[in-house]
Figure (cartoon, rainbow, N blue to C red):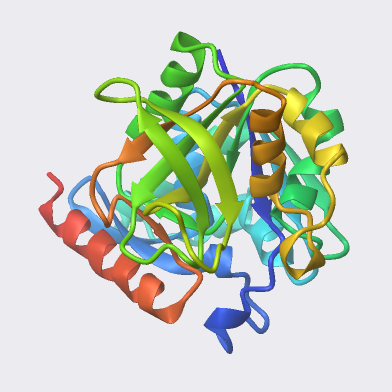
Length: 284
């Protein structure tokens, strides 16, 4: 059973300036329904709760400069809780639930001093992870389900005994993503034959979504991978090395366009806001 997650959250978020000049993009607000009321929740909190509810208890956040707000958000503040008005029972319960789950978790913060790529961020977690399988979940990926997608990738990784299990989504023009060439195995599973980071001429419309299950051999692949696009260490390139080494790399697919949204652009953030509000309104 996978119970460890690495959450890279060290990027600058320059495409969301000036919002991200001082505030991390991982802290952007989204809508969520708690009991009978709609609440506003930072994206990184939503990710944490999804992972926790799927059984993850060990969390490694990879952070960088100006990410202190994330650490502060995950620091239990009993005095603040006392300030919540007595008649605001719903929000008091939301805070209580979040704090309880923080207390039940092992949370480690690792600084990535230089933004050397998503692969470099993951490599920073090598000592924390040790020799057990683990998840990687980008801190800026909005997924509209609760914990279902986390359980699904954990179950698929174990069931099919893959070295790496990825999430993909079909996109008309995936040039801004890692792109996978895949062959369908069954109704839920694909075999990954090749991956490439942000290709100028994509060979498929399967874009990699930044949620992965790995065995620790990914660290060896990362350590032997040369810097790629933008002279950064790309996780996609390390996954390709696993494929070159003849390891089994497989994927499961998000069915709908709004199931997983990278909030790194204004357009995508607006989509995530719209989808999260709609879901909160409809949720019982």
